[in-house]
Amino acid sequence: MTRRIFGRARGDAPGALSPLPLGGADAAICLVLAACVFAYLRQWPHDLYGFDEGLFLYEAKRVADGEVMYRDFFEILTPASFYWMAAMYRLFGVSMETARTSMAVLHVLVTVLVYLCCRLVTRFRSISAAAAVAHVGIGYPALSMASAHWCTTFLSMALTLLLLCWDVIDSRRAFVVGLLAALIVLTQHQKGVYMVIGGGGILMIEPAFARRSGAPPRIGSWRRLACYAAGVLMLVVPVMAAFVSLAGWDLVFDALIRTPLVNYRRINQQVPWGFYLPGFSVMPHLIRFLPLLSLVGAARLVRCWQTRADPEAYRPLLILTVLSAFAVLSVYYYPDHTHLVMAAPIWFVLAAEAIDALLRWFAWPGWLAAGAAGTLALAFLVALGVAMYGNLTLRRAGYPVSYETAFGRVDFVSQDEPRLLEALEPLLRESGTREIFAFPCFASLYLHTQTSNPTRFQILIPSYSDPKHVREAMTMLELRQVPYVVRNLYWHTNELEPLVSYLNEHYEPIVRIGPEGRRVPVFVILRRKDLAKG
Image (tube, rainbow, N blue to C red; front, side, top):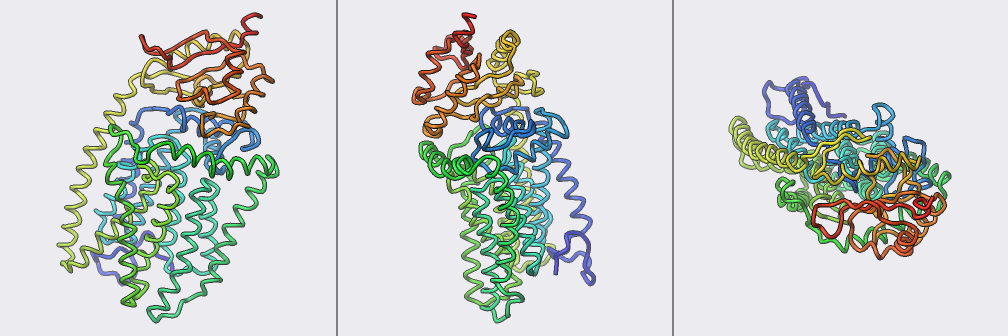
């Protein structure tokens, strides 16, 4: 049977403290949460982060312009999120407003999904609402940008809700779960693979617990697993086969397998884990300890196994514990505060379930348990609300320069980037071209100036970029005779040979931009030497 999201089941006692079914009050709370989260995120500055966010948004524009991932530009992620953002561009225009509004809607959906998941595992609306707000209050400031990561978070919570809603997962439903898991793989394969294993693990473990309790499983494990695998493969195989046919196996393998496993892992080892921006993060130390909830859940499951408890009583705990454990593995490649918050919503649900279990253990009357839960949730929401207001105020103060670009209104930390755009535009008009090259990594510049990158690479940085990528970019610069290169401040770029020598030989600096008295400029506009002679 299916656990219905809204509506009271026949025979339910009025006011019963049961997590199911959800009623009209829950629908109203979801609407209020959605409105508040959307309004809050709309107040956030358009603080376009030039590297990761600029990369995602510019590459989505390349897709919207008809280019093919891997063949026309290099990217280490699977394609779904880029094509989703490209669709938003097609519908609403290529702008910062489109990007941030689309992501705000996505965060609204994640918030609602967290609330619904919590209500499926706890009696208390107050605890569920607090867990839902925690996503935008704690998680969003750690990665306040348009990112494929948040698309994965949304799909992972949708997968969690689906598993919690269905009491019995037969073959047909296992196939549907497989399709949803496949979407995660097609969004971020390095995370999706773990979530696929986690979903399959649940289908295998459930019958084992049922047999342990003396109840025969209602459907065979291997049959369900086969249908689940069919759902995954039916979506992943044809989509990725299409990209292989368009781009070639070598380019797809290089982008999705070799580079993530070798270069990306190498550069992550050079950056310490645990990094976060203290002024722009809410409760970062709390996030670091959230994975411990998975261990607590595992310990409770062991106890259920030992006591041969009814599997229906702890099935939600089994689902949340297994998925949260694989969520940890999905970000283990770089488990810092920023990556952990992308998986945090499932831990917020697990925390809500643990609080409900603790209050049940006290065996308090319903009104007393509800009062305790409400008090705890209210205290948390007040503390979180104060932090959210302070964080928003600080963030807006940190980006005081608002400037109208070709990508719409963008807020900057200083006047350096607006000065760069003002200096670059007349040069582009004079040269009669809209091609530039941002080196080594500054993809947002293409959006700000409505220009295009003639190479396949938005990022060329030491330890990450393969030597053959560096040579390919250099070859394309020479072939296209790109008139201007914009260098931004980055570490150890002299290691990017032979491209650095090529730039020194064929380009000359004409504009330097940076704070007064600073020896190393933030930006340097380089002009091709033969262009100056002409």
